[in-house]
Image 1 (cartoon, rainbow, N blue to C red):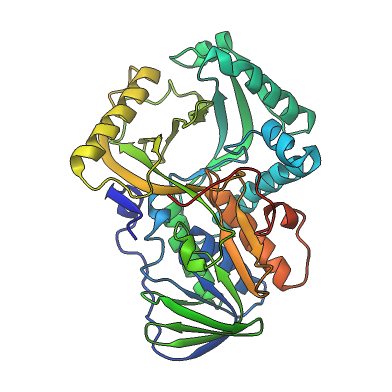
Image 2 (cartoon, one colour):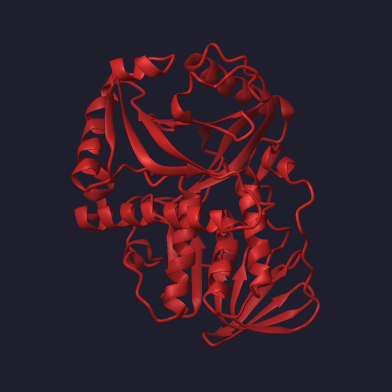
Length: 410
């Protein structure tokens, strides 16, 4: 399945990543991870670092799927506001989930800082602004709830915003403790470290069939056979390959551009905040380590990415226009542009944990705008479950939870 179309920026930053062999012989392991993207590599890394014998297979090459189109924002705030999530699942669970997301940012920062290769990780604050006056009441409620539960947020009014930015918005929440990184560098570097720690990685190896039960799964691939006690499905935006009807996702396609490096100083961009807005679908912006600007958004209700340069260029021009409205002094020109598949769940929560119908099968499906955060949560939660430890948000993100909104494959 095609997951993206266009020219991707991140792979250009590491044109010759490490490669791994194809599986040609039977192997045995305690845990098999299917999928070599952000979630799969995070799971494989965490498992082997915890002393669990693990194998990872990827039907293409490591980080070649949706990871290559990921825009690398690490934010604990979700597509669904904390105050809205509380209405859906209750205050206690909603706050617990948000705290888990905040902790996941710290875990990702710690892991990234421990890698031998630079992955362009930078700590950033996030700037969540009201797209219109009508969004102010809900944004104020969100600020109040985040503040009441100790998330350390700030409220900025229009005058304060205008004092440090070249634009004026009626209000915004500033959250601290977030970060940004290069997802392609991160995943390929994490895979290297995982392999050094004992993870057996096989590229160009597809899982064709799965038989058996917990403790004795048999996975047949295009050339070899794998015997595993546990299986982790980290299959990204191809949930059908996980084979569970509970994973009932809504698919869209989204767009992004990366500009050429901005020739003049980015001083008008206050502390290089990561910017996003209350409108849905929302616009989001960040800077990069080499002074580019990444702009994303314009989500459309189609699963398949656009497949022509003309269609892609039309959306890229719109993103560039949005950037220029916010920062009119920047001489911004798009150098990379892409369209990618994106998925969301019906209740805005990821599917993470053991399949209740088939013990020993786990899902690491981090659907939503916080996919990298969900990958980190999935790695710890699944590792804990295999080791007999109960993770604090296991019931919240469990695959057998009751979803509160209907979603469907598109």
